[in-house]
Amino acid sequence: MLTQFGIVVVALLGFAVVMIFLGFKAVPQGMEYTVERFRGYTRTLRPGMNLIIPVFETIGAKISMRETVMDVPRQEVISRDNAMITVDGVVFFQVLNAAKAAYEVNQLQHAILNLTMTNVRTVMGSMDLDDLLSRRDDINQRLLTVVDQATSPWGIKVTRIEIKDISPPADLVASMGRQMKAEREKRALILEAEGMRQAAILKAEGEKQAAILQAEGRREAAYRDAEAREREAEAEAKATTSVSEAIASGNVQALNYFVAGRYIDALGKFAVSPNQKVFFMPVEAASVIGSIGGIAEIAKQAFGKEGK
Image (cartoon, rainbow, N blue to C red; front, side, top):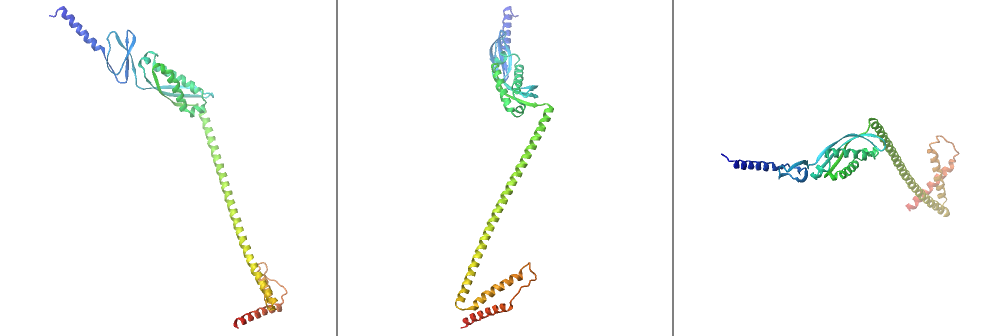
């Protein structure tokens, strides 16, 4: 039989085993536990196996050190231009200091949520509706800066704040739709007018170039005509000079040839005129025949000289 001393020893050994067993605390990865001694914070347990003093020390708060996502419920916000909108969002935050998160603020997530909602109303209420709809990134950045600075004493790091949805009233949406339609029609009319203006400019440029080319063509043609007339006049002058020399040398037949040629050319022009079908004029046949005879005499003399 065990003596009274043996029973006490066994009881003490059993109590020691129980105390040691109770003193081991396994902390999961991504979590940190605070340790309290007589209800006062002493230290923080990291992930893994840790040892505390049973009875004297207890686990205070179990804090998740992983990034946490929290929805911001929908709320109504009045913009600076008195437009009522409904907005909601989401907050991403992470605990960096478990002791501060456990003891510096009561109900951590509730505090973060209320702080975020309050700043959403403040930031978005200071902007016009057009800015709220078009500058969402600026809104997110301003909210992140303000909320992160406010939660820093709690050992919290707010990593992101995103506005998920901004919903204006139905009548305001309809009005904005009409405004956008009018703006598109305005841009279409401007583009059409711009196209017509460009087409008119191009057409005018084309007509200008065509007129320039036509003027250059007329100038070239006039130059060619003048050159032809000049050569014709030179030939005529040479012929006249030759006739004059022949007359001066006593050859009257050359004069008859010159006059007969002019006379026959004039008759030919009257004959081919499109406006004259029948015409009467006094024609001295004897003079014409005499002129032709003069031409024949000149031809004989020329051929006679060549034969000699």
